[in-house]
Image (tube, rainbow, N blue to C red; front, side):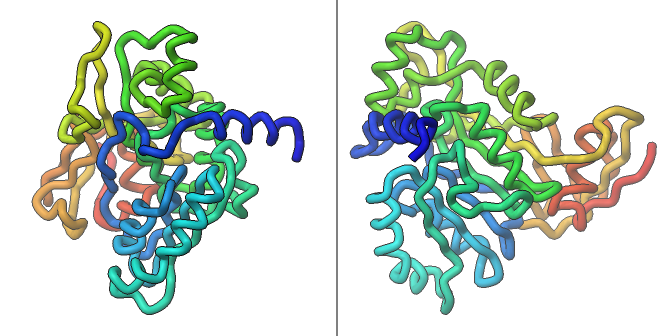
Length: 286
């Protein structure tokens, strides 16, 4: 094991995960997953992957990566019973042990994943920018990063954060929304869309602690190649993406009623020409 790998192993071994992450959120998922390859990072004992398995169906694949070998063994041990529960005949699940900073060690190749899901975990990463770089690397062109996270207006100091880390406390290790977006940009993502995660109930239902305000948000971002500059476009949702039958909601600021042209900036319009949602949209110059 290299020195870098030893550092990662020591770091993640020091995070308490026996009782689950403090302040974890319920698992939110994007639509249109059938047939997709979806990666769940820090999948723990596989509950999220079992859920993804049902959504991607027999033609898709649900991948789970975790740093803890015991968690991976447990996830594999219950794979067969969840296969039956999902009414599948052949497994569409795969579990591998790896550090999220090095997904290549799990055999995940460049541009091989449609969606990367991270649920209330990135605050605890050893190197968040490197994890985000790995996410960007493994996504296919047009692929989606979907992150349910917890953000704070005033982060704790380094000593308090170190203590929170050993407790697996995503509150105590939370960063600001702006800092997280800066990390995303450093990793290659040039866009983000935000959904208010207020419906997610963290453990204890706490939104304020120690004079700080915490915000649960779902951030989605896409690996897009087109220019974010230029004239806006008219985007028409043609329907067909459950559960968004009447209107497609990208985030809190972008909603597309079926059959109605919506003026959209060039950066956002790329989502509807490059991502897996493109077939359900018509995009034209304004």
